[in-house]
Image (spheres, rainbow, N blue to C red):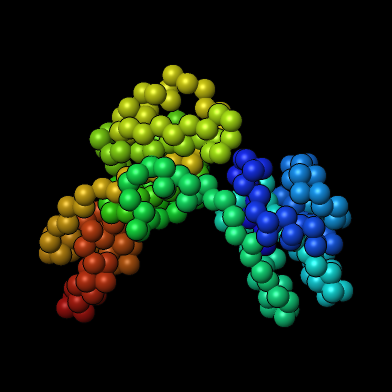
Length: 271
């Protein structure tokens, strides 16, 4: 597993150069982009594509090559394979088949962005890409409102404004956010401000490049467990299951989900 530069080929490490030159086959998310990297390091392996659309088929090929004793390298467009990118299945199956799996560390948009944001990084959460719609999107957005750690997100250019507006709806307009784009590239930018200003800023700009954003932690105002249980009881009365009601009340209030759930089960036992 080879982490590749997130934009600047000057970030190629000696270990990455050695790994790519020693690999007999390289599986790449984008063979054209990888060709530039391979030329830069002077490597001439066989190159095969492995992306979301053909991951299952190509993972089978990868396992056959490993069984033949070949040295295989796995890369994605930028950063680490399997981190919001293909590769996890290949890694798991290769290890299950008894093959050695080595990670060549390298540049990370996540770590670069959280450091550049300046919100503190002793603890942080990586959420990757938000779902586009549905209950899972609503659930993950809701957690941003009460999260007491910086949250790192990947956002595609055409989704930037919609995601910023959705985040602001749960955090409020005053929460700080760092919007980074094209990290380590020629047009690198780090924009830091509050959520309201970010929407105003990016409403008037065309979003270009790769975006990694960091949402600052919020100050959680925790309510009493009793108040949270009361809210959950209202949800149950409205038709929610105890499990769903306890989860929703816990997210909304910051109270212990387990304590809420146990209270709801006690209610059922009494009835």
